Image (cartoon, rainbow, N blue to C red):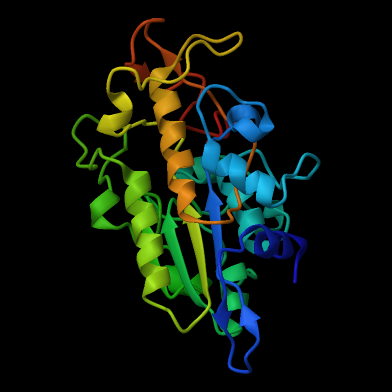
Length: 299
């Protein structure tokens, strides 16, 4: 068992199911937040948004302050978590994109299905396995016919746009910021949490492993109506930054959804911030610091 796998099991305890010999085996849910900064959570000193559920998990579980991340970039960090190995070993060194962009970065178009994966190990041990949410390890843009979720050890998959099996409820057929794309702009986090809970309820007699990889707080932000209501636009000016109500709402959505479990594994790392068009508006735009081609502007 790799160090990453052990960490996931310890940090992701959410319940227990009976093994054939009477031995209790835990359900495991890994909640992976996209572009969440280290100090975005209250338990790490953040004050942009209230995160009481995640703070409670930190108090009741393990809060890491010294650790090693496989990569600060989207796709290789996911590869490192899933395999427990250095992502460069599997030729993933930047965020996966178009085939031309991947060639420019000298990386593959998708994760090699022969790589060791945590879901495959747990499936062999009798676990029901599922992936819910963002994948970004192959598929989307012009990368067609990548390996399916089953090739990595998953029984089912509810993927977003950049995945081998994008789910129609949360899928954009064009670039996700395109004005013409059909992405359903509603509380996607809640939808992903509901699919995760459904999967757990559908397997009462088996231990379950779920990778719940959220889009948020990465752009685009689509806060729920209740969070965008008057008086619900965050906690004011963060130190050294303009107030950003949209981002605060998006982070609050993540924190609220975390209350569905007693334990969770998150990825506190320093993510990008967005910028608002003015200090008094909630209309936010993606940061222009992130490019979309070549190896620059990692997602």
